[in-house]
Picture 1 (cartoon, rainbow, N blue to C red):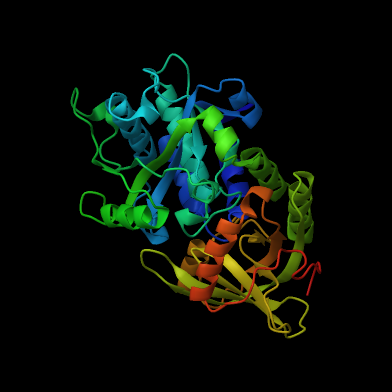
Picture 2 (cartoon, rainbow, N blue to C red):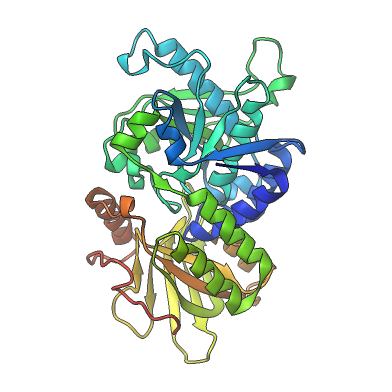
Length: 414
């Protein structure tokens, strides 16, 4: 367990941006979410999975911001995730007499909020949920030091919940709306919708359709997978320790630059029990992104040593596989992660949406970066998740088998 203040939350989301495998949303936007959604006096408690085991009957649900990455550059949505969490609690209270799953949902509501993935925005969002909802409660809402993937993911079908057949319903989305304290008495200051669909793929289509409708404007807070601590730990253990790891990575980013920064990040990840290595040092030559409900594209980096080799990273919001120009097969394939560590502080951390914007504005900027491979957490090397990643890979041009990293290519530099 640890308690985190507003300023250090930005350090944490910088590290989460690194772990996100190129996705998870803009670090700059995540900092704005914290600035606008967290008060100067707010403190958020982060608890480990061992502490959940001590309260098996306590309830939790996942939290996220949902929508196209580009939409959050226009609408920061610092209160929408908390609105979705409130709406989820209200829904479960109504369902206590109608659905046996929620018969024992407590009058006081949830005890914890769980990030659905680790990434700048979807780590910042649960922090705002905990801060905002703790203000009016006798016992504050805590954030779980874990998430549903150990990285950011292109689709809901790639979470540990989907892999372990956890019902995705009800899923609740909510708009930013007015700040709840400014709304009329008894009248919610936001729009909300509830989706009851049994399959993650269908649920995601329904959620996107709702989010893209006029009341939501392309971005919304979301809550899914309500369950007890005992159900979580017994049926679908999440990837533990990811927030504390993100905080350590963020501190490494702030402490040094260049190659030292990259190798300190690798050391943090290895110390947390996952294989990791710097697999490329270069400058960004090309960024190609097609924006829409999801952003699909590729990033091309030259070799900083001047060998003439290039690394091409293919993404669907998140990076899903990478291939060197001097090799015939990918060197890293999802669910293993392809992460960015910038050489300097401008920017301190970056995702694909930020990269795309930078290169639209200055195509010749040639940002220097290190690419870090991170082995998927054990919970993610699940046949369901591997097969679902393979489907994403095929849409981007790779139809081969998954070979776990580092067997695919463990060299530390080009």
